[in-house]
Every structure is written in C-alpha cells, then in structure tokens.
Amino acid sequence: MTQNLKAVTVAALTSVLAFAAQAQTNLVQTIGVTLTANYQGTNTTNGTTVKQVIKSESIKTADIIGLIGAVEGTNLPTTTQLLKVTPIINGSTGPYTNIVRWITTSKETNATTKKVTKVYTTNNLDVTRFFTVSSLGGLSTSTSNNGVLAAKGGLSIRTLAFSDTNNPALKTTLSLQAFVDETYQKVTKDGVVVWAPNDTWTVNGTGSNAVEGSLIIGASPSTITISSPVLEFGPGY
Image 1 (cartoon, helix red, strand yellow):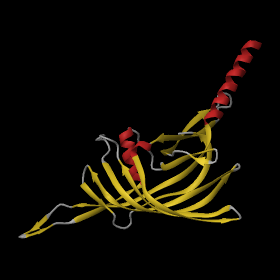
Image 2 (cartoon, rainbow, N blue to C red; image 1 turned 120 degrees about the horizontal axis):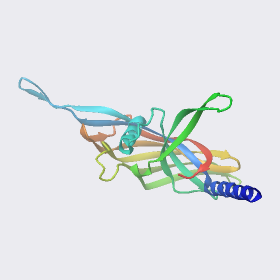
Image 3 (tube, rainbow, N blue to C red; image 1 turned 135 degrees about the vertical axis):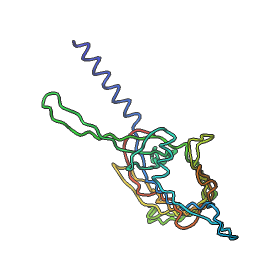
Image 4 (cartoon, rainbow, N blue to C red; image 1 turned 60 degrees about the vertical axis):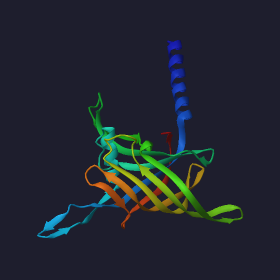
C-alpha cells in the first residue's frame, strides 16, 4: 500500500513538473480583419449598349475563420476568435503563433447529488501556416524618463499572404501589403512587464476567390488590427 501511494505521488509530481516545464507567459492579441474586395462583375447588355461593372464585397474576421474551418474540417462557431500568441521568454518575446480559439460547453452530472453542472472548455487550434508575414522596413519612436521606457511607437511596411500551399480547399487567398501604425502599451501581470503593440494595418493588394475570381483589395475600409493585448499564463501553442 505504501509503495503504491509513493508511486502515485511520484507520478503526480512528475505530471505537475512536466506541466510547469511547458507552461509559459504568453502575450495574446486579438486580430481583426475588415477588407473590401473588388472583383469583375458580369457584363450587362441593353440593345447595343454593353456595360462592364466592378463589384465589391467585404472580407471580415469571421470570413477568414470560416475559410480556415472549412480547410480544417471544423465548423467553428461565430464566437471564435483569431488571435496572435507571442511567448515571453526571459523577458523577451519569442516566435509568435496564430490560433483560433472557441469555447464549447458540456454538462456533467454528479454521481452522488445528481446535480448538473455546465462545463466550459477552451479550444485552441494552431493556424499559423495560413499566414506569412514579412517586414519591408520600419521606423520607431520612444520616450524614456531616467532610463525607464515611458512611451513607444513605430511605422513599418509589411506584407501578408493568406494561403495554404496547393490546397484547393482554401477558397480565398490574399497577397497584401500594408502601412502599419504601431502604438505600444505597457502590459503587466504577476511581475511580467511587456510593451505590446496595437497595430493598425492599412491594406492593399490582390487575391483570388473560387467564385468571383481575381480580387483587388484596397478600397476603404481595408484594415487589419492586432490589438487588446493581455498576458496569459499557460502552455505554448
């Protein structure tokens, strides 16, 4: 009995240590997408007059999430979030991950009291492979008081590709360039201090859609925001 108890204790401790080794502080930001996509409309004919038109449609965060869900074979709920998760390692930021996060609910019944409890489960899916970002150059501003950073900002030009190589299941692809305005804010939790950017991307570019064909992105509004930074303590993604 004593040996079994020791074995269970050691196993439990090993499990806790394994979790602690995996746990980390993550900077989590919400990604918002509002794009205007222009495409060639169908010609109309009235007698000898032929009219060629350009039409437009919106591409929003929910549309991007829906496209990803279709590729992954997952029916993601309307409350799903598109997030950027950046690990904080020894006070510095590591390589980020893009995820979609949604909450599912279930019911559990207590075997003794028969009380039914609603259980909420957080689901995270790594979708980094759909997004390729690169920087073409940038500028920065900062203000320090007695050597302590008090304010920070910046401007940059970046490119973003939304794609999934040779996967016909992704019905819309995008190739974008953006002017990025970065306004940083200080975020703290449990002694961890991070200066996190709230980015506003003013976007233009091209794309393709399985229905409309070629797309031109850029008419107002066409923006991407990466904002609302919070620190979370949990696993890596």
